[in-house]
Image 1 (cartoon, rainbow, N blue to C red):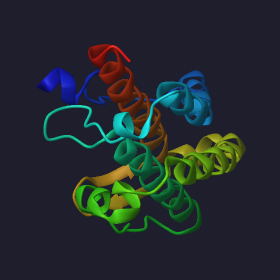
Image 2: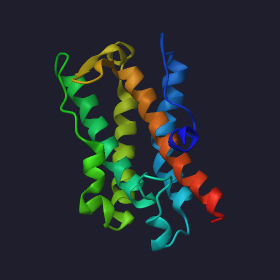
Image 3: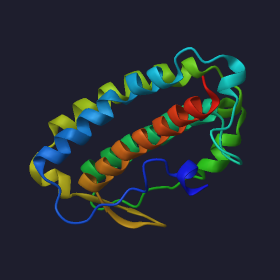
Image 4: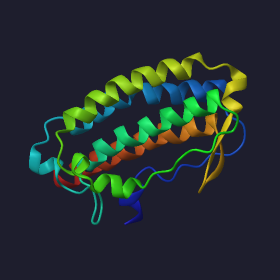
Length: 174
């Protein structure tokens, strides 16, 4: 079950983040919309409504979750860039995934949002100065989060959910 839950492993990072690593992560952020489109290409409605693992979200919910989560992350970046150590508002991603817009809406809505969101997020990320990557926000559950580490987490997050879909396709022979 752990391999189904974390197909690429859990995100881990410690120490300094190099400029080269940041640039790789930014490229991954920018590439996610295309990667997700490739992962879901050709899936029908029944396949989109298939959970990627037992007690897991459906492919549709995963796509909508990516849009919700990454929109929240962009806002967290902007808060950290414009306020001194802001405390962000967490959200219950599992409960959001159960709302009708995540369970039932056409995935084209979130695919379009991801296209625009990641293009804009990529522009912001590429504009940051070295000193800005050390800015932080406080997450009430996770504590202080540096922007460079948050970047790495969201690059991982996109790969993580893309792997959920790709691995499901492989297991199901789609």
